[in-house]
Image (cartoon, rainbow, N blue to C red):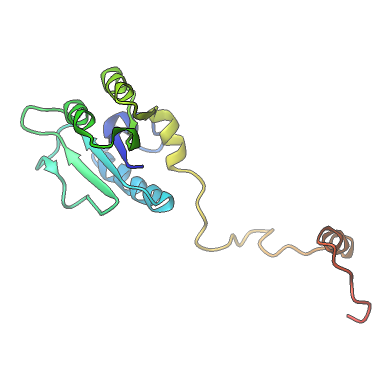
Amino acid sequence: MPYLIDGHNLIGQMPTISLTDPHDEAKLVERLRRFMARQGKRCTVVFDGGLPGGLSRDLSTPSVQVVFAHGGTNADRIILERIRHARDATRLIVVSADREIVDAAQRRRMRVIPPAEFAADLDGPTVPDEPDAGENANPRLTPGEVDDWLRLFQRKQDPDS
C-alpha cells in the first residue's frame, strides 16, 4: 500500500528533526527512503512552500515522490486533491493529523496513521552494518551453557569430540 504523507506535519512529531532546520525536508526524505526500502513500499510526501515547487526531481526516487506546494496552494490542498482523486482509495495510507485531511481520508475508507505513530515506526529497528565491537561482540559460553543449548536443540554430545 502506498503512503500519502503530510511532510511538515510528520516532521513536527519527530524528535530528531526540527521544523526550524533549513534541511528538515531533505532529512525526512532520507529517512523515508530507508523506511520504504525496508518495507518494500512507496510514498508521496507533500511539503508546504518550496522552490522550485511541484515535483522535486532532485529529491524524488522511485520509492519516494517529493512534492512542494507552490503557486497559491498548500500541502493540505494538494493532499486533499490526491485523496479525492485516488483510484483505489482503500489501498492508500494517509499520514496526517490535520482534521480536514483525516476526515476526507476516512470518508474514502483510507487508513490513517497519526504522524506521531508513523514517526516512531520511521526510525524503527535496523540491521547494523557491522557487529558491535563491544564487550559482548564475541561472547564465550561456559560448558554448562553449551550443554543447555545442546539440550535445547535435542542434540547429543559425541563423547569422542
